[in-house]
Amino acid sequence: MQSSNRDAISAAQPQTLAGLIAKARAAKLEATFWDSFENIHDTMAEPWAWDLVNALLRLAGEG
Image 1 (cartoon, rainbow, N blue to C red):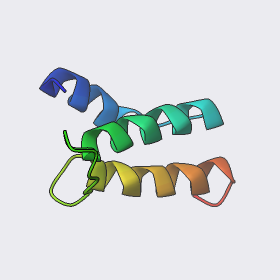
Image 2: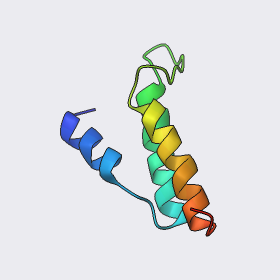
Image 3: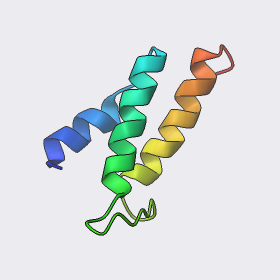
């Protein structure tokens, strides 16, 4: 994934469930290696996962 795409995904603050799903799909793609092994650590998926937690709480009115 290109750094400009990563920057845009990092900056995105989902306002809808569809936005959350889009960012979650990007995180999953970022964490998946060529052999289908998934590892979130030391990838952009790690901070994105935390962003998703915060966005979900915000959408629920708790953030």
